[in-house]
Image (cartoon, rainbow, N blue to C red; front, side, top):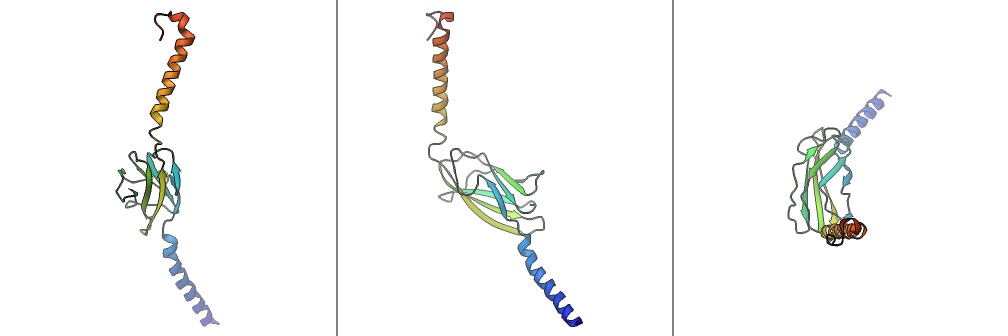
Length: 156
């Protein structure tokens, strides 16, 4: 009976010790932009949340479809939420992008992964014509409705 207990305890310790490394790796839980997103505008920041707290050495990198690195600022671990790493990113051209992440858990285990998102064609180009059109419409509205107070010679 006693030998059986010893064998069970040793077996349980062995099994538990084999599972611990798998449990220690930080797994991606959520991201902004999310995996497989199709965006109408370029993101200003990459955010990634993990299943365990992270430490220095964790990083985010972004590559375009030609494997050229996008301009990404330094990756920081959020001081209020150590499961969140973030990195600012400069404006992206339309196309498909891959976010590569390296997460170093607070116990030192490193995990790697990646996901993709798309920035739609022409999304940034639509902003200024729309803004310009609104400015023109407001100007015409002011001229038409306020013409009597300005006098015919000063309007439009």
